[in-house]
Image (cartoon, rainbow, N blue to C red; front, side, top):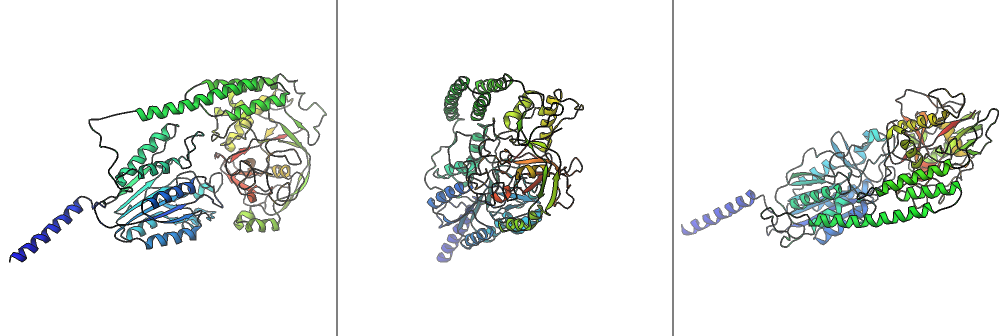
Length: 640
């Protein structure tokens, strides 16, 4: 009886201990053998959608940190769908009941009907229904992880950078809404998004930030390194730090946390290095120090700006050279100093001096005296603030892509119906000379409109790339027409016979645009059939701006008509209502008409697109109210 009683007591003690363990949330810090497995995927090099810059760097950093903390890491970067699936299967195969599993994904993601999809690098999608079958369903991945009965699962999803289909008419059907909360977060799972709904995760805190990692990942790594910090405390600390750091640059980024975890674990063993708060202790020393450090950097920047202003003021040269000096100054010092207003004053004075240098030059002759016609390829300007325009001669050309060029486009990865947007080839005759902007409209020209009370007062963001002589971006088709209305009103008094509300400036038709872009050539690009090196600003075109940002408008050589950046740099709005083919295209170069709300055609390609998308025949489209950092516009002008 004594042995039975003793055995019964031991059993009861074990049951009580088990109950206590469950009541405490099955704390995984206890001395239970555990296996650590991680899946890490980072995708930058997307072939058909917007490319990223920091995703792979972030994934590599996270992979190293997890490996240093005894995780077996299944790692992939720039992975097509099959490679992502293979990595997932390898990861799932390592999970068991004594496993801690961590999933880290950095790249593009979209939601469709409240389901989230991680985008592989080889995704091609023309409609929303193409995405689920060709991407990775995040919810299914989390469900499968739970089915493997892992002791704890942490999913870190940094897929909130931007709309992967930005600048494309396909964006409306293909996402851009950000990730949705998990439909169901299974027990034992902790899910963290780098930013909340409709927020964009920052890669850096402004131009002075040289950290190779995005804000979210760098803060996550810092928190992981702290000894003894439980995973729930890690994610909460990351959330707080990201919110605070983003606010210092006027940005809102709040990581989203969906917690159905049971138990916990620590990334780094040891005694916690941060004591519990006592007696309401409070300090702002770290914030003050960071603010002082930032102010010191901006003070140095401001000193350099003042010195550069003095250098520009002392310049003596031709009116064109003087304008170029002030354009360079305005482009170099476009950032806003958060600690001073002196930069705004200097920019305003620089813009004033730029305008004064033009106004003090000999006045332009009356644009088109009776009986005088501008000769082809001549350049003119109707007013000091008007864009320079190049005269395009009348003529005929074959518009669109040949069947051979369409086949080549498909061989470069395009879908067949994308190639068919450029068909059929058709003959177009343009019977009268017209003028086209020598450059896309610049920030300096747009800002002159705003300063003069036009353009609805809208000041488009420049993405910290600079203003001045860079093409204006983040302007819609409707915005372009606000600029045109202002410009026509400005020149109307010098143009006899112009009706009230009318004017010579407008957007080019698609036919006019392609005729001017080809400049008498019939090759894929105006310089030949191969993209070559340094001929345009696009992804892999061989310039310093490739896949990074726009280039100043005079950076690369012009086409034979003297027009700059007809290929690459920015997509350019046209007057036409977009159609999926040229079956009903006007044969006389006039725009295809339709309702005011119709989708509008864009031409030319951008700094973000691969070479096949900047060909003379390449087309795109978007809604007339869409703004994107890939899109600007170029003017056309009717000639008498």
